[in-house]
Image (cartoon, rainbow, N blue to C red; front, top):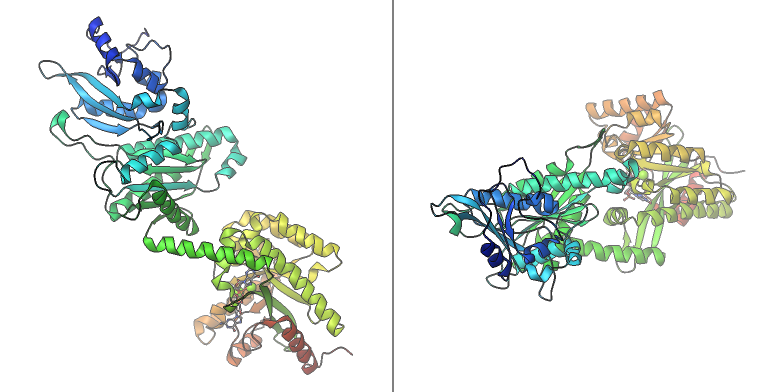
Length: 588
Ligand code: C2E
Ligand code: MG
Ligand code: MG
């Protein structure tokens, strides 16, 4: 017996009651009001994996901490007169049919009706009697339900063996870049963070359970919410109650998100995380747990795309959108293998003498049946899938190849430089980009003739990473242009800090130089660029009025349909050559 400061049970349980309890063919335990064991049979011990412990008189939280929070809550509620049924973390999928650990608790009253303790029973506990099964069912790190237990619960929620199919509410929470936490603080702090989040979710969801019906122990049993850890940093929650209204589900999802992302204090460290949640209220079309989990994952992917810290409900249209996106991704992989990508080049003109000095390489997809496809239709998929990394390398190599072809055909360099667009995704793992550039340099091509355009919003998304990659690029001799300037969060600091070579005023501003405000904005940008010594290209120049204003205002370069639309490499060669002849700048 363990000595305990708490009051001792009123009287020892008579021997015959202990034997009676031992012989009951399911797992049973009797607790006193202090959550200490008065009696429990072997089946109960087996189902918690309790071996050789002196049980009687000890509180359950010392015997099996992972299951304690839920049991304690059930115990508390049983003491107030409720009869409750819940799935335990550690719900098992043991046995052919996939049994669950359903625990029921009810008050134990004396002859006067005073509650003296709590009776707990576990259904199907025999089927999960081994330690091995318990490990399988419970996440060792957090004590939450494991994947198999969770899936079993989803199955029983949406397709119960008896009764009509019912809507279930399932929430899937994914923490962003958890690997970064492990890398930065070490795995043991990472583990501690996961445990904190698990506990918060547990606390947040248990309080969300429906209040038990008034009227005592014979009320309908209530199921509790289940929190599970499905992957390293992925948590899932299924509500035990009937599915909430869409508005309530949204509020609940936002609350879960708040719980997960509020800063975690581990020792001295205050760790900030971001996360996203996808959730679903299942419909008739979700016939299996796999259907439900596939769609909640679709919602999560959507949330992530608009993340961080975003919440997205599943809706039928999402599944078809994602289906289409996957098909497109397949086609794009194929396009890269089968050389269906092409580059078009749009001239960049010096405004004071109209000379074509540079060009921007723009990606096109020469689709076998749809013809030439513009990047807006496929770039998002390339970026989100990471396929932009190999495609981006192809763009660089192809640009260099084209410049060498022009040089061979015309016996001179038509252009001072060609700009290549690089997306933020390529900066996440810059080694591939840097290796490609090093290869190009080693082949003898001067990297000063390549400019890399990165959008203002990409620069600001991750300023630290951008800073280090840009400086490595600059060491290689690459020049940097900030694209779509003025559209993102202000990258004024970036112009100074990163010593960019050029800013490209977004065409939205160019189009507004017919207004006073528009002109003021463009003048302000020109001034900023001048202060930091950066060249300026105005994008999207479409009219003579725009060009003349820009020219008068000292904008160095222009690009836009007024001068030329993007064209393929051979057209561009001819265009640039004629242009050189026209401006009297042709070679000897
Ligand atoms: P961007 O880098 O800002 O490129 C300029 C876009 O404006 C091009 O669209 C170009 O065709 C269009 N444009 C040029 N002049 C005018 C004009 O006078 N009026 C109008 N309305 N539009 C004009 P495009 O080729 O459809 O490219 C769209 C965006 O796709 C590019 O914007 C760039 O961000 C991205 N992109 C293109 N190629 C690549 C690539 O190889 N890699 C990456 N990562 N992104 C690329
Ligand atoms: Mg660009
Ligand atoms: Mg642009």
